[in-house]
Amino acid sequence: MAVDAKTVKELRDRTGLGMGKCKEALEQVGGDLDKAVEFLRKAGVASAVKKESRATNEGRIEAMETSEKIVLVEANAETDFVVNNERFGHFHVNVCHELLMNESASLSDFMSQKYSKNPEQSIDDYRKEVVAVLGENIVVSRVLSITKRQDCSYSFYSHMGGKIVTVVEISGAADEAQLAKEIALHIAAEAPDYLSSQDIPSEIVDKEREIAAAQVKGKPENIIEKIVDGKLKAFYEQVCLLNQKFIKDPSITISDLVAAKGKAAGKNLSVTRFIRWQIGR
Image (cartoon, rainbow, N blue to C red; front, side, top):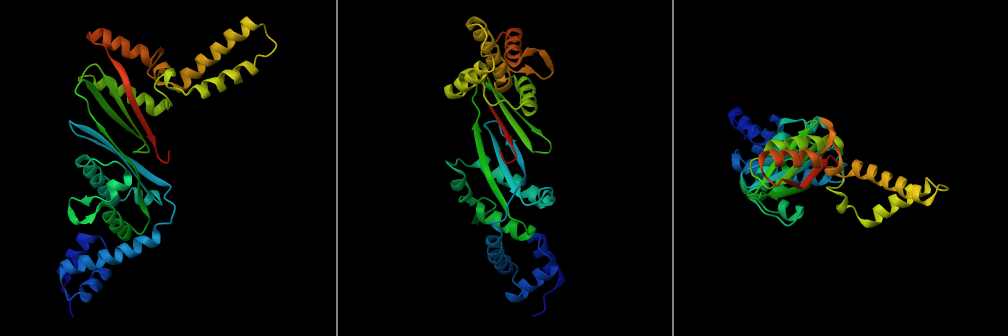
């Protein structure tokens, strides 16, 4: 049957597929727009399955917040070309909105939930639809939801167009978002592995001590102990956020910065949590 150009264009606007593909789908279902969308969805799911095994080494991390929570979503595709595509961006933002509205125990549970903009689909069905439109494998590789506490301040920082995203929680006050922002920026640059030295597993500390001692063999025992302690201190300054030199003022540590801000404000402030996500790790 003949299909009018207006209906073809409307189907294209709804699906993002080419005019020829939309015209063919409408012809298959007698010109019914909703049936054509369903037809394409079914075809799209089949198409997406074929792409599932393709590597998705490019991506972006999106962060979003409300007064009650912060969410992070890492979405990946095969090429930066698709990652920078507007439709991929819309998909990524929509997934963040879904996470803000849901509590999920795991990534698989979240992806199997109903998509709020089309309850006939799961969030994973929506992903497969975008795969069909953009022609590349697309995955949501990890999600995180952080519930805000009333006595804490929060901030997140996105670096390199979402290649690195950091989040900081400061306890002791709910109005220290600017301090949290400064520390989030520092974390993006300095990439600490732990909050403090107390968080480092004992086997890692023991190994570092062993390596340091092996480097100063032959020296008097009391000298060896001082040198090893100094090397461990340098190790803590490298991997522990609170021990790191503040990137904007290397004369103080992050611990010093927080203590000074707390003293000036008359509050007992402390960094209680940080997250640093980088694409692929």
